[in-house]
Image (cartoon, rainbow, N blue to C red; front, top):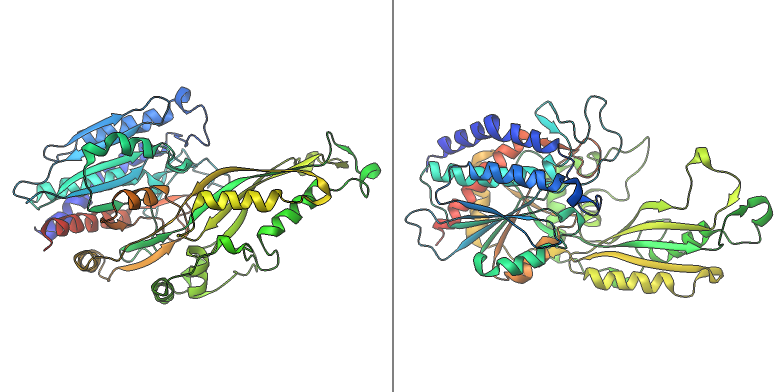
Length: 472
């Protein structure tokens, strides 16, 4: 394999074809079903999967087959199958994963852009979904096309591109079952939906937190009443909700209190976090847009462990509180809070939801009507030990493409797909990586795709797939 020619081919593919297609993809408001319950009628998910299918079918990969697979009532899935290159010994399969559904808009976008209005500036393509995770299908197929063009070896590769990841991948198990016989056994999974600690090397994700979410509802009245008449007599629904949340979290420190939501941190992951902190330095903290003199909860390796192996609670939404401009002197009848609990990788998500329900509903203050409705329980993932061939391939790829050795770290987000695949293919090796680096702001305003980094990541993926085909 001519590595220089491979890199040049991938760079040209990105500049001339992939960036324009991702730009088109960003324009489509293909929000995940959780955020667009009328997704079928609105047709945006159908538009993005058709866009991806048309592009995939145009790629020059020998024997490539692609189709949209459908199960009634579920989001569609793009299935890709590329046979092993000529002369490959066979018997192994690489799975390439990505998703096309998107997070909702959020507010705070640049004045000259928006979630569905792509903008290129300083090598960054701004817009919803480009980095999380629309680029993945393009990068995966560009890597295969480059290997084919260079006559480099690769095993059989299958692509799984889903459209409900941002809603918890609840449709994916049904598709994995449906396609199980066609997929066969997988011994390498390449997932492109994760992050990177900086834009200077290849990053491998070694763990992902889980998630337990739901809505806490506190009701104290059947209707609102004048606060001058009722306050001091009727308990505040907000105060009751605050006391209940205090059962989950120490308000002074942010530490999650229930022991059953904690898990031991493996020694190897502790060492990895501190090694990563020494690589990325101040970016551990400075990548976040702190307001004013706000201080972080931890520094260095401890901050990384907080965001990867320790539980943390976020109140991500509320109902029952009017906008300030509409707030009258009324003691409100109810307060509802959307709770999102990030979990250590080894804690079962469904068990955590049940624990939160038990803790929050027990013995309610003032005997108020209290209910916790669980929305999602997603179990995290802890990578198996990296095989020597993969460790060597990752380091060689990063050193050749970026000029620096690869690095590894855990991620704080949740990719439900990983726990599913870990169970389904227990002997597989995993390269979980991505382009969500400092300030890329997935899920928030001004999400961007660092184009040069994604281009180089594609070249690294191609090298790893080739190394997989020739491993001992």
